[in-house]
Image (cartoon, rainbow, N blue to C red; front, side, top):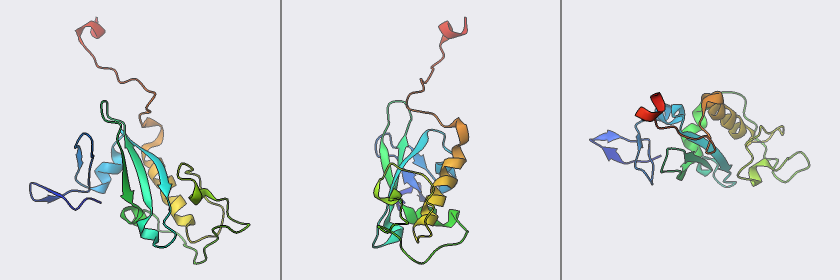
Length: 143
């Protein structure tokens, strides 16, 4: 989270490239021009894991990292106490930043994988893709 201020108001995040500001987490998660790209676990301090979002606004395409702690309250289900990282039960999802699947292991990090599903679900099928052309309408397009 950014602890910056704009006009004396708290800012959730500012894009480092185009400087777009999201005043709060809800606005950030509802922005259809943001795509969750990855998650890097911090095996020492869970809250310091990082979610990676790419800003798909034309001319920007910056990827920014936010600490996982900013999203922990999105999950209210059961949390497991034992870490399974590296065990036979572990599918090693947390070791690959680009894998955003649910984790089937009863591991203390499994809830973060559920948060990923919540974030992905916020966008549904409406999120823009880098491959989607952004159409700018001109008078010629309307004829």
